Length: 239
Image (cartoon, rainbow, N blue to C red; front, side, top):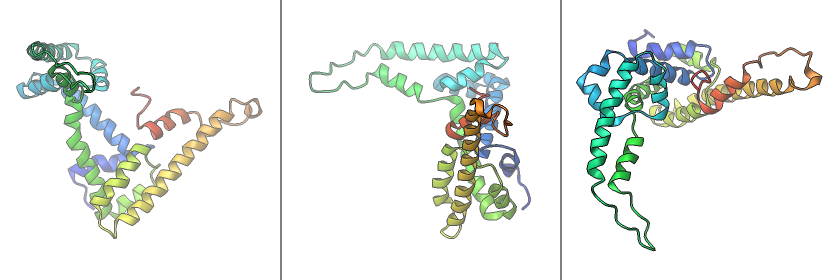
C-alpha cells in the first residue's frame, strides 16, 4: 500500500522498538503540540484567545515551563490570568444560596467557572482531533494493508490503556469479518508483551536476592520504566 501523509506517523510508530506504538504516537504528537504552542503561534490572535479561555492542565503547564521560551509562557499566563481575574470578579458578585439541612449546595457561579476551567486545556484539546485521526488510521491500515497487519502482529504489544482503546474502538471501525481477526492479533501481542515485561520485572526483583547475585541481568535492567509504560501509559522520561 502506498504511504500517504497521514499514515506515515502510524507506520513509524509501529516500526519503532516501542512497548506501545500508540503511546509513541501520542508522545510525539504531544511534543509537537508543545513546540507549536511555544513557537511564534502564541502571538497569533486566535491562538491567544484560546489559551486565554482554556488555559493549560497541570501536566502540560509543567511541559511548557521546561521549554526555553519563558517570555512566551509569561505572555500567555498574563493574558489568561487577566481574563480569569476579570471573569471571577464579576461572578463573585453573585452570592451563593444556602444549602439548607436536606439539600446539597449547588455549585456557585464561581465554583462552576473554576470547575469548567479545570476541565479544559489548550494543548489537550488541540491534540484530541489529531490523535483520533491516528486511531482511525490504525484501523484503515488494518483493513487495507497486509504489511501493516504483519507489523502489528510483530510489535511489542500495547499499554493496558491503549489495548482497551483499540479493543473497544475496533467494534465500530471494522466489520464483522474483520473485527475477530483484529482482536485475535491484538490479544496475542498485548498479553505476550505484558507477560514478557512482567517476567523481566520478576527477574529484576530476583537480582536483589543474594542467590541470584552472580546471574546475568538478562533484559531486566530497564524493566521498571517499561512496566510503568505498560501499566500507566506514561514514559518515565516525562515524569
